[in-house]
Image 1 (tube, rainbow, N blue to C red):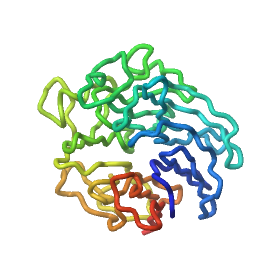
Image 2: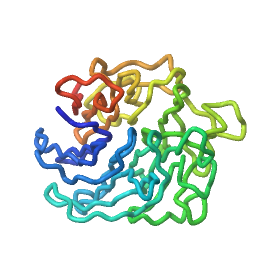
Image 3: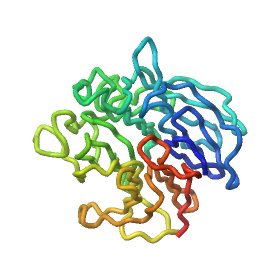
Length: 317
């Protein structure tokens, strides 16, 4: 309870880490929110920027590396950067910038980061404005899915030479996950409508700002399109056996204030609510025990918080 503008969750074997927009990395251990944050980072004070995504290194239990996405201001400009943090006993020991100068915005920074099954770090970046064509520019990190090594260098098998860019033409990615076959899916906001779920392929162009959802053969079509907007957040394919879902694809939704399950083959008609009545739902992750962890987003300036918002919830059955 009483999380302040939480943005993303990462779960280890014994702890839960939550980023708060205003810069704190909160730690939950033994079902208790620790009084002192792991770190408080100084970011830009803008509506939809600040401390956003968080990811734990695949070998976090031994190396204690975690990664965050941070919006900051410099000389009147907004930028985003990726920090690699070393922690010990819930305290920051070292912080290193491993990717910088991702163009920033007051409203559409993307900000979601996750390690893939290939142990590369994937980063969703947003456009600086709806009028910007930078998402189509391979010389810009705006409006892209990026893929980097754990030290910030660029993998040799990325689709563009000496570049972190993995795919382009994105507006505002907010969720990222992989299925059992290693296919990458991304959820992203549209401009009031045309939110998208996309199947990401290396080197492909998803159209923003030239295309929304579908209609132009030069770009990849979304596999699901939402009109009006539901503001999709965190997504995952459920792989545990603790919970019984008809469909394994799980999606948080802020504007629709729900946690949903969806079957891609059946489309939107298959969408069913798993959890509602808690307001805006921003992120969902699967814990090592097969339960789901969810954060609400009612203190973000768009919701209607109660006296205990925001909350981290655990779904056991």
